[in-house]
Image 1 (tube, rainbow, N blue to C red):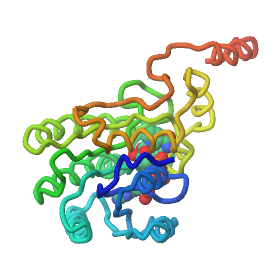
Image 2 (spheres, helix red, strand yellow; image 1 turned 180 degrees about the vertical axis):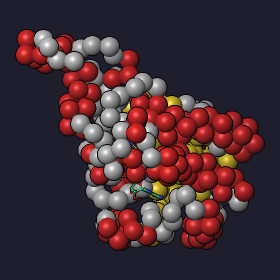
Image 3 (cartoon, rainbow, N blue to C red; image 1 turned 45 degrees about the vertical axis):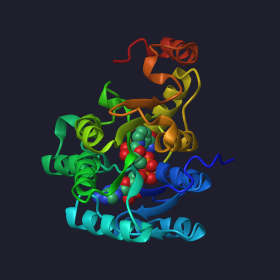
Length: 279
Ligand SMILES: NC(=O)c1ccc[n+]([C@@H]2O[C@H](COP(=O)([O-])OP(=O)(O)OC[C@H]3O[C@@H](n4cnc5c(N)ncnc54)[C@H](O)[C@@H]3O)[C@@H](O)[C@H]2O)c1
């Protein structure tokens, strides 16, 4: 059900690959709330996934951009502003990829070329998007920018690898640029720290099924899914959250403030006898 929270607003959404993508769900919710959107992803992802179908279903467009490439971003922002006939009201950065994770390189055996790619794609691309928008004065006063993060930025989670470092940098960029963009142009910048979610990127994390189950057991409200994340992002893009900026906001069913839950303890106790000698 829509509430017209984004009626008349224009948004740029990065990172919808397929229906499972969090960005896809955010786009669907934003359309429901009356927004007009430009969708973007890399040329390869546009070919591999079905983002064109999402755009076509809503009379929207897909403009390719590698978010690590400043020329691509400048072109994307120019074309988006042309289409909208003016500035952009909100931006979603839902971009992440680690070649080390993909190639199974563990944190004590990182390939540093891959690490640079991880940081460039998953964190610096956020700075690049913001700086390109800043230089073109592309975002409306009172506008809102959200990037998606994960609690591995604060706590160590087995298997998340160099993506943890990328998320820490991403959240720092939100604060540093959030100060400048807020002070000078009245634009909010936040990160949403989301529960583990079954998507193409999420499922690439080592031991993902176990992580999903563990987080669900630990969270009093259960894991937040992609649709829950979309609902939250919509409120952050809306005029109802005008004074929220430079925050990392947990959308995780309470996981981030838990230490142990009865549901997790039940599994742990069940396995304890079998695991007396486990390291
Ligand atoms: N799935 C989870 O468990 C989870 C949890 C917390 C945060 N997140 C974050 O949510 C965001 C979206 O991921 P998702 O889980 O929806 O997975 P996804 O695989 O659907 O989305 C990742 C997107 O990043 C895009 N991308 C990769 N390299 C790019 C580049 N150079 N330029 C532009 N786009 C590029 C991919 O094409 C893809 O669309 C990521 O930042 C991810 O880290 C995911």
